[in-house]
Image (cartoon, rainbow, N blue to C red; front, side, top):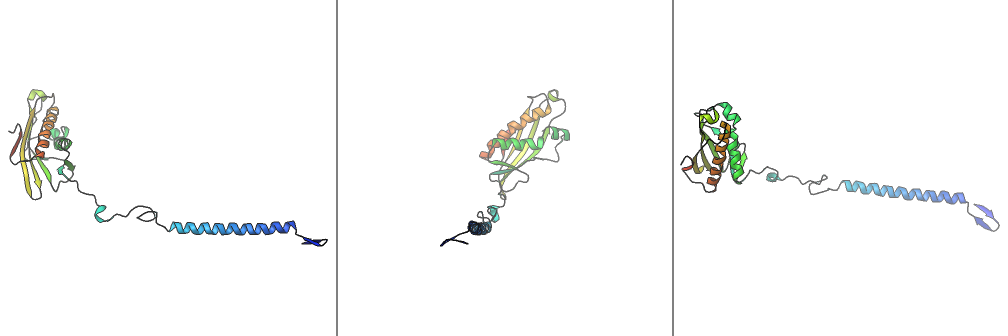
Length: 201
């Protein structure tokens, strides 16, 4: 400070230096407070399951529930004594088309890889599909089925359909399975034992 007359005056540079020091101290305290708050927040869970906010699975809740209703294998069994060419089985989708059509016509039916619980078992026991298309006459298919619940059989049936309404064997068999699927889907609404469906009556 400099003396001027009977009064003391404050050096301007000194005042500015003091003010700068106070400002830096205030900023430092603010930064320290923000850093502390951020650390505290990082240790808080973001949701019921922890930092990710995801709930932790609890036992059976994490397990995939088995489909309810009637289970049906995606692939139909073909009896060992059936005389049918592999080409017909593959090109006409004999093993997979019927289950799919049944599931489309009955909402209680669910296709699975391995059926269990209440399920429908299907077995192709006869296929008539000679070469020659329409020139070799009608094509037909016979299927046996049973509805199983637990260790008991709720109902069983034999279904048979035939068709000539196509120029090819696969076209005829497709129409056969379409009609048969409708008969089986209806039967499942009120299953009985010893039922005869379609042309098996």
